[in-house]
Length: 83
Image (cartoon, rainbow, N blue to C red; front, side, top):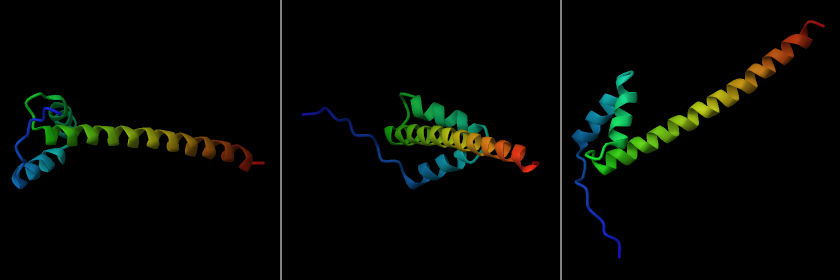
């Protein structure tokens, strides 16, 4: 049998404050790391922040990958258009 500790449920107000903080530029990036990896943060908020970071990393990788493909396509097409 597993030893599970139960975390207090985050209230609606806690989540609203969390999302308001995540709307502030630059502060959001710092707070996602602080909340995600702090031992004192509610585990629900910590897991949310870790998932948020993973999704942001996936979006950045896809953006760079698709942007790179688009740039290569644009430059290869531009060279043959003049002929």
